[in-house]
Image (tube, rainbow, N blue to C red):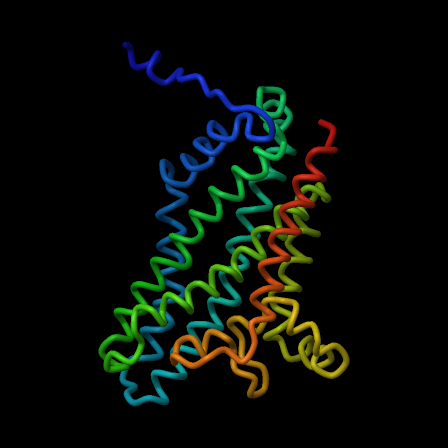
Length: 270
């Protein structure tokens, strides 16, 4: 069998899964057979673990380690959504503007498979680059200063919340990209939601007039609000969570955003 013939393997997929495997392979190749993957990994290490190293440099004791860890979580809450939104919007808007989406969807590819392939590929790539790799390196950085206080299980729990926060903004950006033709609205809406929590001039009126938003949006996963510790803090310290409502709500938002993106893409005309 020739090399070209080996690549022409038929896919027997039906229904909404038609074309999913081929589209997913194409999206994964864009992550790991180009420079995108290692560039994202490098940027994540420089931003997240670089800041953690600077905060730990010359500082010892529980308070210093605690402050460095909280700063790491805050940086993740600000930077990870930006990376997710940027990649998600370009993956759909870029193909819509170039005509690639119309060409691809003219093939045996169902529109749910088109959206899900992008979600799975970007979700996996961002997990490796912005969650797993910085999490493992961060654990190694904290191992000696924290004297083994942060166990692998605790760090895994924190990274799980970090990934849930990432998925919220990834699915949000994918959904918004199916409604808008410009990058401005997608980026603007997503980043306002991402940064409304930690920015005082936005969070102050929210805390005064709509505090219930903290229970249905992902802000409390990684961000500390006036003594209301982020849920990641409790997991990092092996303490029981005071509430799981933000976790459940964020997961439901991710499902809703994905469903709406598929519905909107199904009605898109090219």
